[in-house]
Length: 337
Image (cartoon, rainbow, N blue to C red; front, side, top):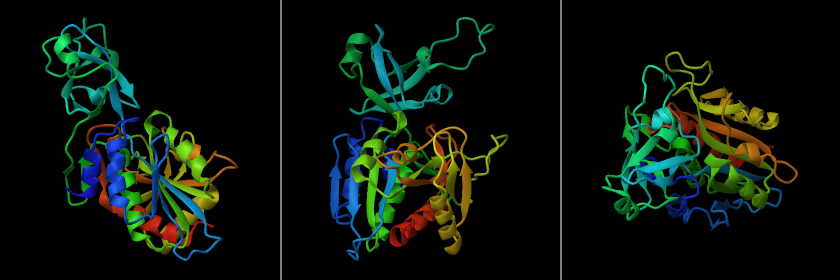
């Protein structure tokens, strides 16, 4: 199993990112001389400038470790688990999916039958769903799973072509992969680089806020996934799978710093890296809060075009991923001034 598949397979819903963090830290040992975990759980790996120059730019690169999940709210007499979401879970994509708890317990998401099919045209709702863990009754279920336990979706990674990977948790383990590979390739960078693997992005961009306050960078780039507009009758959006890394212009909570956006475009053109400009109408990334800490941070986003986001079969193209890594490596070596 490769690093991408390994990262995506790990259990790590928001607030339960510790296994992901341990895997990333293992990968970065010997690469970044300074690695620590802050009190919220963010992993921060520091790569000082190779030249030791005092005027090196302080740049923060950020990707979030957490994935969406489900938290148990009630266990009924028959042993079925009621739940609510941890992050943006789409009910229509959750139905009949397999989930796994931290202790390895596996369950299937079912739904109550509609009382009157002729009167109800509404889509499925989470409050009508349950998790079936195969328990005979409440007592036996409580021996396996407790109130407040969190489940993640379960799915194996599959390459559906030579460059296209389908799996759960590409959002945002693919961003974590980009940062790890950048750290390996940019060991002799002339700038002061902080690789931040943040927690709790899916429930409010929480880890990025505290880590950015601690790092206090001049510049920051978040690396995350973004939607595409290239599927049949998709919402109009000029981002397609396989046509290059997406350089964000705007999303629902963030306007890219114009200087940072122009610099990224300039680098992509000069290095002949395929790129796309991204305007995302719904959703945002860690950059939305990073830009606001202390006196402000000049921030941007590199996005990996991804289909079927927040499902168990998110899909990306490795060519877009490689473009993002090449661009990040150049930023580490050259800076953003």
